[in-house]
Length: 144
Image 1 (tube, one colour):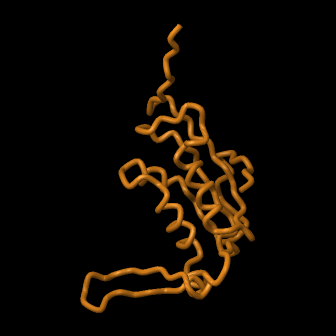
Image 2 (cartoon, helix red, strand yellow):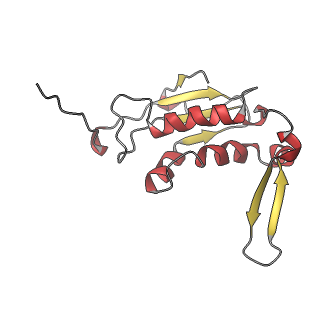
Image 3 (cartoon, helix red, strand yellow):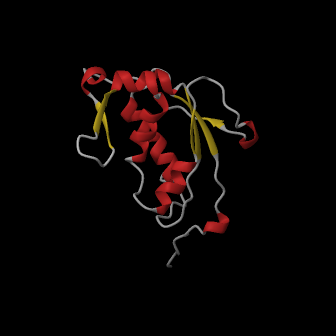
C-alpha cells in the first residue's frame, strides 16, 4: 500500500506563536532554535516551498550571552559603499547600542536567502524588556 506525503498549502497554514525568554541564553543556540521555529522544520507537515513556520516573540534580547572572548573579539560590519566606508562594531558596543540587532542578525543568517526567508523574518518580534504587546496572538511559552 502506497501512502501519499502530505504537502502543506499556503491557504491551509496556521501560524502558531511562541514566546521565548532569551535572558542568560547562549546567542548561537538560541538563534538556531528560533530559526527552526520560524522555518517550520519542527512541524510534521514541513514543506520547503511553503511558509508554514511559527511566529516567535523574544524577550530580554539585551541579556543574551556569548561564550569565551567573543565579547571583545566578535565584530559586526557594515559598508556604506564608499571608499573607507567600512564600519566595525564589537559585540559589547552593539549590545549597548542595539541589542535586538545581534539576535536578528544571527537568526537571519540561518534562514533561507529568498522571499520565504523575508516572510519568516517578519514574524520574529524582538524586545529588550520582559513585556510584549502580542497578547492577541495567544503565544505559548517555549523553552530554549
